[in-house]
Length: 383
Image 1: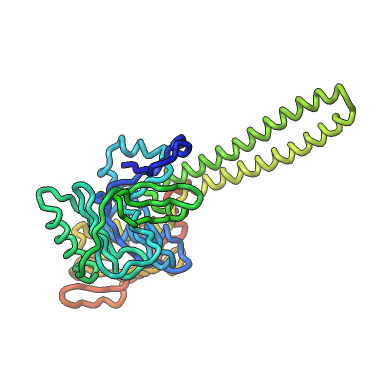
Image 2 (image 1 turned 45 degrees about the horizontal axis):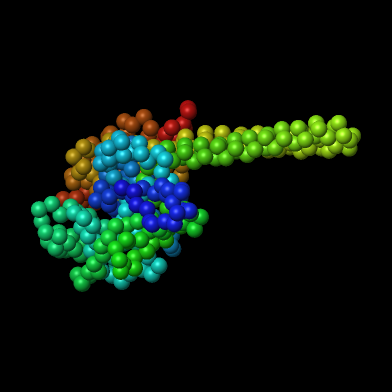
């Protein structure tokens, strides 16, 4: 759904294009971020670790905490939305979940839970004292009473996220867009008496956009190209007008002829700048078509895993552009043996080494060192 705040007649002439999607269509996870590392890459890696979610099958976005130490990522299967809904997003500035209204409190709330009721949906926002929620749970009421659903979700939040089982703050109303501009996105609840307001900077708002990332990159490049073309057109139009005025001046004074020559030289410099800008835009478009090598490495490790999901990755470490260390667990030694043999047969992998296998309570924990072959292709590369 699209929410907009009441506007003055002057502001209403330009409708806002912020699309807010139902929160119950998304699953939400909070992750820790590594300092000085690309946040988007860490989010994609986390999505790969959470399950076999192919990028082509999901929409996702993320919100980082103010201190940059955590990120709340959210994703939804594309099948949750109709083709008509997805097509309508093409003209939107931003598309994000409606629970974005909870993600930017000025002061981190105390540990506990918030219960939000909106029409037939109940949401519980779990706080553990951090700048971002520890988790969000959403559920339709169906035939169960609102109080029953709220009690079940609160108990689940206490169990899953370790928040205290205290009296919850009750919230209601619909999230609406109050402002959207250079200062960022301002969201609030439209219920009278509510004090909930969220201010999301532009960069954070863009990172929360759940649309296809390749399409967003292409849209950004198209906007940059349009901007340069507009500047070029404006420069040419100004040049034509100047030439017309100069032509008239030729009939009056020889001095204006000299001024016209100077103007032509100035326009030649502008044309050179436009050409350089177009070359830069083309190069950026070429770079946008490439995917991180990291994603291809993870795919090469993920595909041979047993289909029964009895082998799970616990932690991964990138040692070099061709080497990765993985700590993993398997339900049986046979699963580990089969997985190791499958990796050795992979055409992308040069060397596999299993170290320090340990068996405890029927679970085998081991360290896996993988060296990829030189020239292992970047996904989407033209090679």
